[in-house]
Length: 512
Image (cartoon, rainbow, N blue to C red):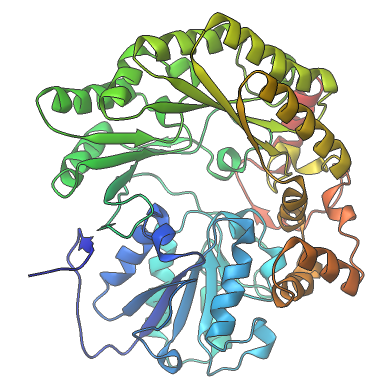
């Protein structure tokens, strides 16, 4: 009898005589890793290779099955800026020097892939031997296969071969690198279902990649251009496959409801529920124009009690600036549909400190809330806010952040005024977001700062102390507006569309 909390939804190749050993690392706890679709899908592909012994490790892994000295290759999934602290912790725990220059030829090659290094790998060019730029499903396998077949070569010889692979950035060997964009020919799904996952026993599947809204600040939109959709029949087949193992499913994508067959997907699931199947289905958020009764009703029937709606800004003027064409009338119609389908509330997501934002824009968030509360008595609304962080390879990458005092002033105003209306409000820390902006716009000059931050404990005080110790002017990365002709650290990445398009898009949004 198998008492394992994990269900593998694919055929594994178990071999007791592996000649190649690999750690595939997630910079966070095991529960988060087991709910990370991209990480698990990439692990699945490597795990199915008959000549590779691959082990998942996490920030909370205490002991490993594969001995440290037997490891040939280590890969990191790098999704969030602050993950660098966990990455450094995993390396140090296993006695690997943080910098490539300090590691020997006997140490394994260490690489990373994911949104952080795809958008701007330069702060980490002296940490990783190479990095995957863009969608990693295919190139990841190509990398592992090359390392297996050339195991006996020196590190430098292997890196020269890796540098020839499209989408691989080998610092000092590849002057430019082309970002990989993959066609969605298959439906990616959770290959391991676990009781230990953050989303317990949940089968996650990707229905689309990218977002056509193209908000000026949004890395998910521009990193994943163009928007791509999984074929409807493949989605249905995958849903049926997942339901053989669990009744909990989740649809993933930055703009799920833009799928041309999303109505049909919802109807298919709702018909199953109405025929007696107990299915719980969740999605991350809905677009306003997708608040259709049939869609919302499906989600309610599938167990959702609250939905999230990203309005980004309180005024229609500022929403136009960020490319979020959303009217107040559309917001009210969405609430009408939500109420008619039995929802008790909606969580709104917004951002403060956006380029061109004024105090009037902030006040309009409060005014909008008052109008909603007056019109919809008893309907619960809440707000979640983050502060603007300029992201590399987006139209707003040239804008610095507002000063911390101004952002704190706006945050305090919103907390106070929305509290008067009985509205729960959560606002991200402007102090932490400051350092996130440093990571986003940084270059190789901040690598030593990151190492110092890790050594000092990784808290806010550590960032400040490290910057002071190393005499690094972090404001020049975080607060300054950049001219369009400035050479940016990440300009060597060849993206479609390119920098000229981002400049035109930035000008179009700001000057309307």
